[in-house]
Image (tube, rainbow, N blue to C red):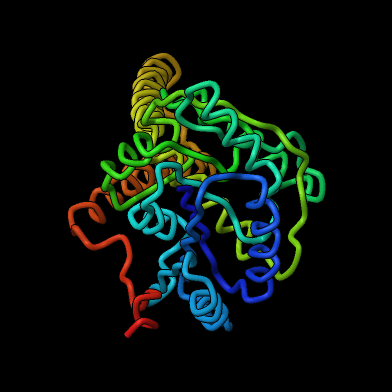
Length: 310
């Protein structure tokens, strides 16, 4: 069986289109299928659409959260609920081509690998600034982290049960799936495809959300920012010692001329800015620790397809 995990947030328009395309592709595969849709606190009629699908198709399941917990929580819930020997993760907006699925299944079965991932070969249709920053993010994270992340990699991937079980052992609250998929270390092969636009609806990923998501990825998989904060603090300390020696020598040789307040204010603001920057970096890591120590659940389920059976 192949379990297909599909996170949904305000996707009432795209779900029927996605399901129809997947049913066409499914005819070319001998495996049984189960769909697991995760309603991540949608404000539209997503839940009603999922209820209708679950009533008419016994292989359609859904999990509805009590509120919006984010895509990472939805992926985690889907992985926990999946029962198939193979597990597929993909978006509902059809930016992940369903027609690649037969090739992905074939690669796993013929090559004996643990995962077939996908990556975009281009970023056509994206704003240039977003494409530029995304590329720089992957360059940065691969330079400062021991976990390699593939530029353009999507969450769209097919995994073996062994790999899924390994990911489920990572019970951290602050999740960054692209990093977790790589961190577990199973053999993965990537398929490239051209970027696609959404078939319907609007994306919920704003520039600010993507920026925060990238910061989470850096904090979760690298301690380099802490090292940078330490380096900046040490550099500032050395610079202040040099400046102190310079002032003392100048006073001994030329007396103590009265200095203007602009230079003093500039130095104070510069040092204060560095201190706030370092405190902010440290605070980001402390905040992550704080969330982990609370031991709150990653998500809360309000309803599943089992409610329809009662």
